[in-house]
Length: 170
Ligand SMILES: [Zn+2]
Image 1: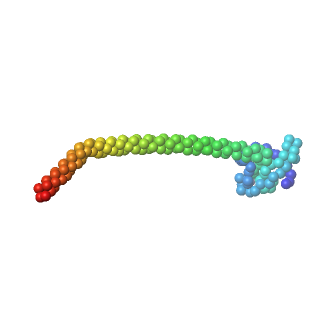
Image 2: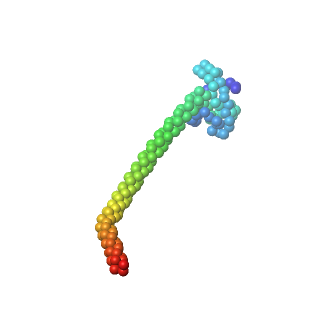
């Protein structure tokens, strides 16, 4: 670090540089100097490395503390932008989740409705089948009874015939 002469009126014509400068607008590198003026004793500043040799030209000058403050403000703005982006993203994601949830609920409702309909139909079919079986059993029972009666009568007739023949031949 070196010392420098006091600020000239030419500094008023300098261009605005945001944040901490990396190089001068002429393309040359920068040197950090410490001011020796009464107004800004030991205050550090960035100065183009060729500025001292080319005093008639306009080269970069910037107070270091202002540059750092600038940088912090720029970072703050970037953070605010990021926060805003995250909030927007979060809102979009939450809206999409809600939409998806609504679609899922609708699909599940439709599925339940369809299942209920199928259950109702199956129940109706089973009821019809049970009723058919019950009614057919009701019809079959007397038939079975009469069948048994017929068989019994036939057996009695056969036994009677055999007894008759037995008595006849003996
Ligand atoms: Zn320069």
